[in-house]
Length: 79
Image (cartoon, rainbow, N blue to C red):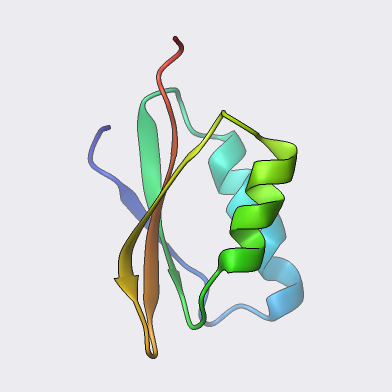
């Protein structure tokens, strides 16, 4: 994966977060990723990714609370 950009959604209202997170993901080129910074465990987001993009994303926790969560979300290279 290339050097990752950071998407910090902590200051956004919750209703906007998933829309912006998925816009960022959809704009990724294969082999690229970004780091999501959030104020809670984004596990529901993971389940949404799994349902909508099964096998088409990577998800790696870099920091797991208690006040900040950082997750690297990527689009893998084509097989």
